[in-house]
Image (cartoon, rainbow, N blue to C red; front, side, top):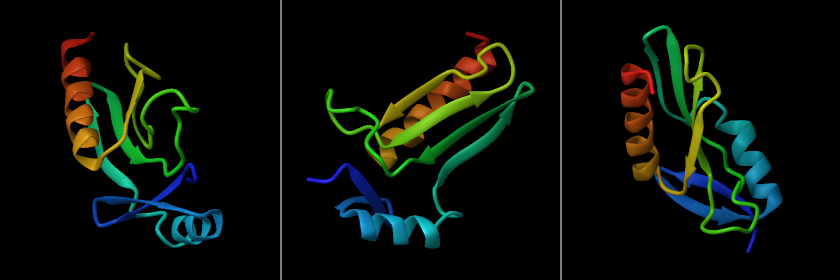
Length: 99
C-alpha cells in the first residue's frame, strides 16, 4: 500500500505515485477543507495527500495549522475529511479562547 492519497469528493483513495502527482497538479485549488481568520490569526485545514504518521498509527493526511497569534504554528493531523472539519473547528475554538 502506498503512502499517497487523493480525494474523490470527500472520499480518500490510496494511489500510486504517478496518479497522486497528476491529481495534485490538477487539483491544487481543491485541497482546502477550511480557511478562517480568527482574532488576528489564520486557521487553515488542508488535505496533504501524503501520510504524515510515518508508520506510527493510522494515516495522517489532513492538517490544521495556525498562522499568527499566541498559537502560531500549532497544528494537528487526522485521516478523514469529517475528522478534518471537526479538527478545524476545535482549533478555531482554541484560538478564540487563546489556549
